[in-house]
Length: 108
View 1 (cartoon, rainbow, N blue to C red):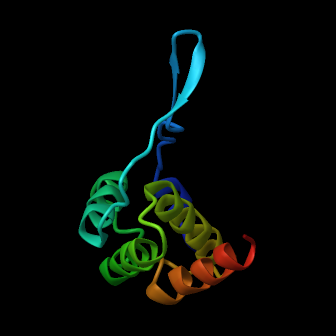
View 2: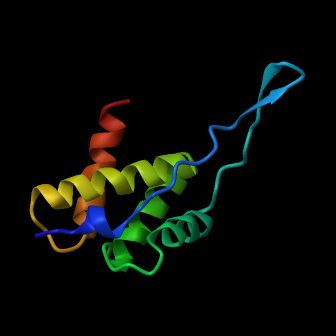
């Protein structure tokens, strides 16, 4: 039985919109590299072993190649947890990430 959901807590990040002078100002961020995305994912894992290391790397590389959006990387990891739990897998593996990426980009 996968206990991935209990082991991993992803934090919601800033939406990138900032109130300024009573209005909204859009803040633009440069895309993250795969190494930066990997660091973000690993920081959210907090030393847990819910994800295989190669799964984290695949998520980081896939998102860096497509958009560099950290929110998208974390969304893919959340979806991979759902997929792994649905299979009662003990750990999120690369094939869970690949399925999550496919599902995520097909829904756009």
